Length: 120
Image (cartoon, rainbow, N blue to C red; front, side):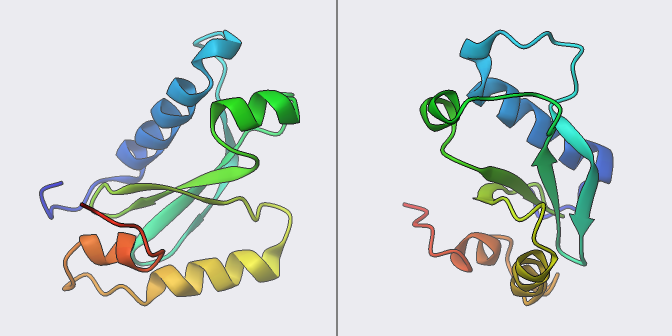
């Protein structure tokens, strides 16, 4: 990470590639979009959701990337797997509000600290 903000398209590509890598054993055709068109955004990040049209068994999901995760990408390019609140607007709002507490003047690693992720 450079501290320089990235674009929506760069963030989406980063999330898609991470998900594609996680699901590589499932042999999903490379032209299939793994992400929903719908996404959440605030001043510090985007959250991208797995494409619901792609059927992934619970067993495959656990083996690949954990139960039901979405991908948060900060405006600085930091990527995190976060709980997928696609169908729960209240939880999604709480999640986005939590991320919004990160101010752009704060170092990007603060994004990870919000979720208690050790960076060592």
